[in-house]
Structure formats: structure tokens, C-alpha cells
Amino acid sequence: GGGGGGGGGENTASESDASSLHSKQPSSPKTILDFGAGFAGDARCLASEFQDTCVTCVEVQRHIHDAAEAFTTMLGLKDTCLHQCVDVFEDDDGDGENIEDGTPRNKIKIKGAPFDALYSVLVILHVPKRDRLWSVLSANLKPGASIYIEDYFALAPLSDLDKKKLQEVVACPYLPSKETYVKTLVENGFENIEWETMTSKWVPFIETRLSQFRAPENTERNLRVHGAALTKELDVFYSTVHELFTNGSVGGVRIRAKKAKF
Image (cartoon, rainbow, N blue to C red):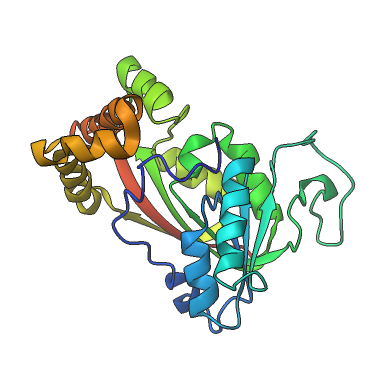
């Protein structure tokens, strides 16, 4: 699903440079949209680190949304870290009545929009309809808003086997090349696009995660914590991600950009 918590598992990206949202503009964003927030750990870090910022967490899976909201309340951050269980594609029937800046009203999906910034880590890879997604995300951002994305992209044309593994194991039904990804961003009103390829930085983490999971001394712990079925699933997942990132098929990227000031 679109908000599950990342195709790379629990943070393929070994670091998430959330503060870049702040360094790229003269003053801190007052409102941040965390798209596919999962359990909202990053969102709570942003909300607690930057006292003048309110983070809206959008998560499509109800049980994860409920747990994330409970954690936020437990930590006393419910005033600055807000949660919405939203499917941004729901009732998306194309063009609708326009609001003042020309945005179709039916694309304003998220309470609190438009936002000063967008933050999304290892979520967009789960969404096949990229043009529709970026159209909706753009509509929920202010002109001049900053975006910070971590995602997968296709380093080379994908084989049928690669596509099958991405879809069935990683829940990634579609993966664009860099050129296609950037074109989609430009067509949906984004500019000043900074594309930072992260593959070489992510691979050591991916390799360590797999080797540690398979280490004999962790076998008993894995079975005790996860049970046999989930342990097998995780092994397939970690090994598949490792294969895709080391065979030259899939890369990681960190994207920073601005929504154009029309």
C-alpha cells in the first residue's frame, strides 16, 4: 500500500536528511506534509525538533494510522503532529471546479492544505500511477514549497524477472528511470530538481541488514520475535532488495525540488 513504510524495509536510507527542508528556504516551513508517514517516527522528530512547525501525517492503512496516532499522543506531540487516514486517489475523477490559484478543487485531498513542504521516504515506489500522484501532491502544496523525497528508480531497463520481484516481494508495481521520474516532476510543476543518487550509500546498509539477519547467532531470536512464517518473508524481502540493488537494476535516490511559483 501507498503508506506502508518503505520498500526498502525499515529505512533502506541509512539517513534521512529531513533538515534539508529547512536549509533550502529562508525560514522554516510552518506546515509539512509527510506522505506515507507509516508509524510517523520521522514526523515526530520533525515536530519536536522544529518548534514552529506542524507536521501532517498521511497514511492510507488504517491500522498503521491508528498506531501512529497513539504513539504521537503518548509522546505529547498531538498538537504539532497531526494524523489523517487518507487515500489521495479516492473520488479522483479528473478535472473539477477550480479554486483561486487554478487548482482543481477535487485534488485538494488533505486537511490543512496547501502545505509549505512535502516529505516522503520510501513510499512513492509503492504507487503505480505516478502522474496522478504527483498531480495530487502538487495540488496540496503552496507555490514555492520545498519537497524532500527518498525513493527507488530503475538504473537500467528492468527484466521481466526484476519487475516480477519488485511487484511481488517489494510491492513496487512500477519503477521509472531517472529521465521519466524527472519529466513527471517537471510536468507537475516542480523545478530546481536536485537528483542525488544514493545507491552506493544504501548498498552497505542493505548488505549488512541481510548478513546480520542470516547470522547463525540470530536464528533463534528471529524465530522467537517474528515466528517462522514472517522470518521466511523477511529473508525473501531482504535478499530480493539486496539482489536488485547489487545487480545494476535498481538504484536509490534523494530528490529535492521546489514547486514552481506560477
